[in-house]
Every structure is written in structure tokens, then in C-alpha cells.
Image (cartoon, rainbow, N blue to C red):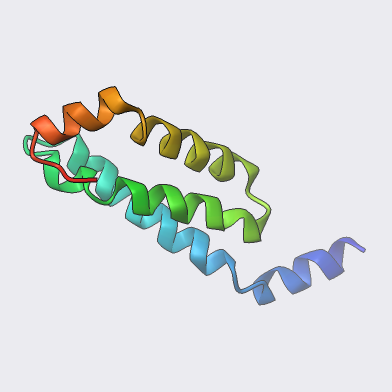
Amino acid sequence: MLWHGLGTAGFWIPWIYSLVLGIMAIIKGSQMLGSNPAPAFASAKTIAIMQIVNIINCDMVNLTLGIITLVFLNDPEVRDHLRSKGVEI
């Protein structure tokens, strides 16, 4: 039984989506920590939606984090702060 699971792990294609999401999230996150974070915040909503779609890989952590991120991005205080920095979300 164990060998069947290990043998078919290479054929589960959606792991590529998780890899791309992880790379994009690291790149955008590091840009948000830089000296000019405003342009990176414009794609924060896209990354959050990608985290929710990652449920195709049964990734409950990213589902939860994506929902939390969207809730925070829709908060009026956060939206006002980002608009003051020149970011349109």
C-alpha cells in the first residue's frame, strides 16, 4: 500500500500549482519587506485568491491564510492605509 502511494506521487500534477504559488508568494513577500513595498501590495489579493484555489491539493493551511488575507484586505482601515501609500486594491 505504501509503495502505491509513493509510486503515484510523481503523477499528481497539481503540485506544480503549489510550487508556483510558493515562488510567487516568496517573491511578493520579499518585495513587501523592501524599501518600496507599495507596488507589491497591488498583487496581494491575487496571491490570496491563489492560496484559496490551492485547496485542489488539500492544503487547508493556505485556504485559511487566503481567507484571512482577503478579510484583512477588505478592512476599511487597511484600505485607507494602502490608498495613502499609493496602492489601489
